[in-house]
Amino acid sequence: MTSQLAQINMVQGITDLNTKLSSLATQLSAGQSSQAAMLIGSNVLASGSKVTVSSGAASTFGVKLDNAVSDL
View 1: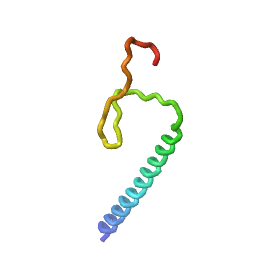
View 2: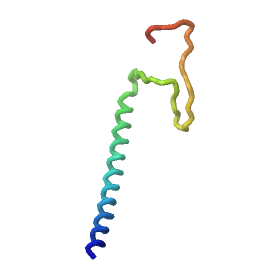
View 3: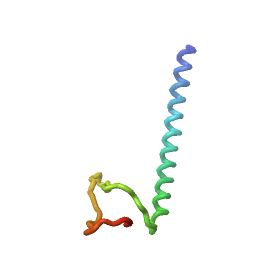
């Protein structure tokens, strides 16, 4: 009987942990959205040669320069 009570408590603990982690994930997502919204109208420099669009397909973009540049 003691073993069964311990198992019940463990299951309850795991359930509580899952609930708290879900809440944390939701809060992190909201924080990222608000940080991204603060960038609207700002100049942003991001390294990389590809961008993933909302449909999940990656496409390259950029400009072709006739000569090398030291600052762009």
